[in-house]
Length: 114
Ligand code: 5GP
Ligand code: ZN
Image (cartoon, rainbow, N blue to C red; front, side):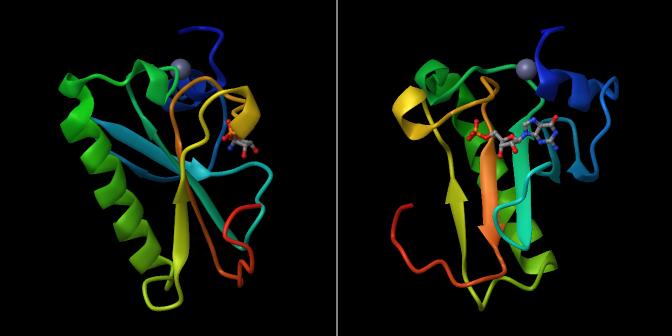
């Protein structure tokens, strides 16, 4: 998808600080972090949102969580705690329509949802 910023990051056309990449996913720092650790774990395949997820993507979504868990450990968050968030659609505030998992942590997050 040539107009998709995350596809452009994955292909190397747009800059980002990439912290992990393999055949299936790419992870990079969010450009506007809301917590001291704020990493996006993104499938290399362009999937717009959870609304477009199908059974064939099940292993890919599981892999995204395994990678997020590894990055949580690498950033010292495993004992402190962290959140994995996937915003879907306008009322959830999704702003980039390429599926992504937010790994946020490194400070206390006092509200269940904010
Ligand atoms: P959403 O609001 O769709 O759940 O999350 C999109 C996230 O992507 C936001 O947290 C935003 O800061 C981040 N973002 C948007 N454009 C870029 C970009 O060009 N580079 C990086 N690294 N993050 C981006
Ligand atoms: Zn894309």
